[in-house]
Length: 448
Image (cartoon, rainbow, N blue to C red; front, top):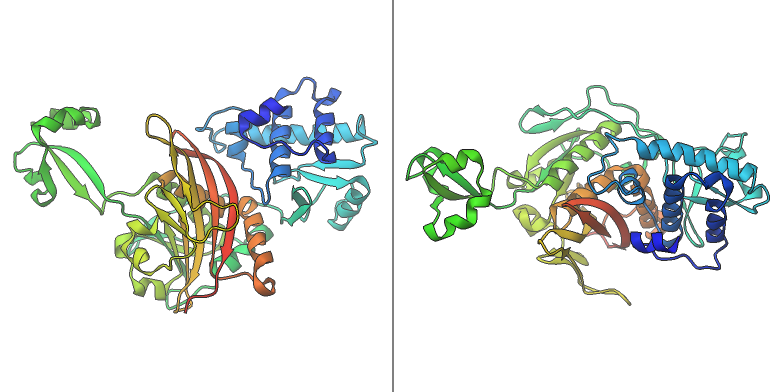
């Protein structure tokens, strides 16, 4: 078991922890002898749940890491995790009805969640009764133990998957044709996103970044008039050999080659996937969403609508100038920690492999209430993959719930704060986020 944890990069739980001893007894039982995948999933989920607080575990993470399907595992096209989780829950029921019938603790993974819960056997029946489940199957209002001695309340995740409809009306607009009632698991987003505001209150404005891109292009004429001479720079002969690998078939056939600086055509893959996840969230919440580019953002936009900004503010002129500099700031090589607390570094760096691809990054989710009473929510990381990870985590109520509850618990008066930052670590493989881990958060006084 310890070899698995080392391979996955998960610290060992204390050997004296009775919950960890329970896990060891379960995987050694006859019910799990011929179920190696179920053992792997159980050890992974239990270890993460016992050693991290708060903890978020996704279906994609279990598939890519615990089941060793790799970073490109897509739960939308492969339901192995959901299928194996159903089998795992049945196996756990078998264990506690058989070999483990005398166990003082009961381990469950509530349906709709991937975080392990440990209950005293006497309390489990009482909790099930309160939740309206007389057969001892946990309902949707179960408390989940996220780490030793710390419990978090999680609402059930009755996730509604919705189609994403893009309509070009003064920009790309995402709006539900018939808004669905948001299930209980989504109620926290009213606190996070704030009430609709301003004259265009029907829709939140999602802002995609406009990073500067150096584009290598082929052209049939020497002056590159077909693609615009103003932005075309002839490629020096001594540099052409370095661009061979960047050319596609159409470019290689052209007699002339140029470089173009573009700041209005492209956005990162993380922004694009984030747009998808946020569109689905807004659809479920019954909120409209207008998608625009960073180059069109201004104070009029911020007064008229709540904003969600994808990507680092430093590639967004308005955000760079107006979003307050809080404790954590995205810098060239990572995330700066301006006022480190005991044991914290002054910078959380980005790390790369030998080919220059990121393997570890950090991401931020932070909120700011403007003087106009509108909300600005920023989901960003130094890399595009980290930005996408922030959007995906935020849009998943199961993963975001522990973060929300941590912010609310630490806010004065137990009221959800309007100005805050949450810092995460993001593990990346093949430029795709495979695991997102909460690090810490900060709450700030409103900016006047």
